[in-house]
Length: 69
Image 1: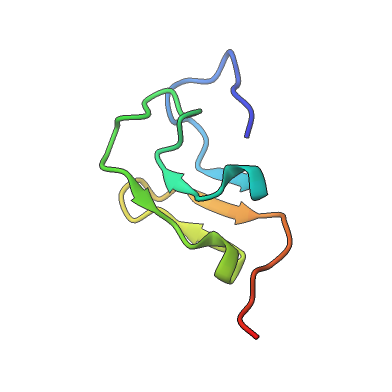
Image 2: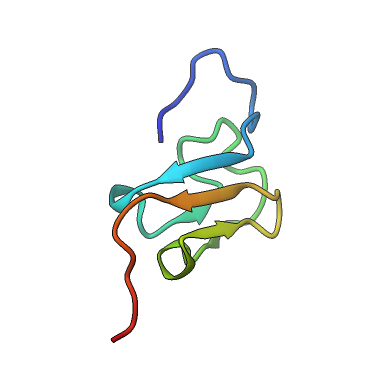
């Protein structure tokens, strides 16, 4: 995820994440208001996407899926 210099705090509501963003939690350190709600970890690798129950941000995983064998 990249920080946008002209973005207002938590302006985006959809993010693409990769292996380097794991373990994924919301809010992320890149979000302007990183302390805007309690940190919640999201299991994005299991389903390919996850939605934050606090702010509604959607995270789409664009890496290799980690399925159970």
